[in-house]
Image (cartoon, rainbow, N blue to C red; front, side, top):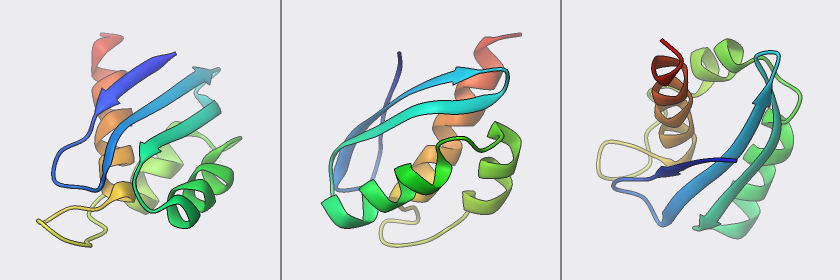
Length: 82
């Protein structure tokens, strides 16, 4: 399980697993439960690059959002593979 510490959001971290460039598990720790659970359910099974393209730049407060933080987490994960 990969863990990303979020910045500027109500959620504190994002935990996820990826197999064959698809999100297989995803959980936000804290944050707005309904929204973060909804984002997680929508993203599971999706291609990592598609999730990044759809969620990067979504704004809520502090210049970011939980979906935007997920995109940042996935980018960091991809960069760690290189």
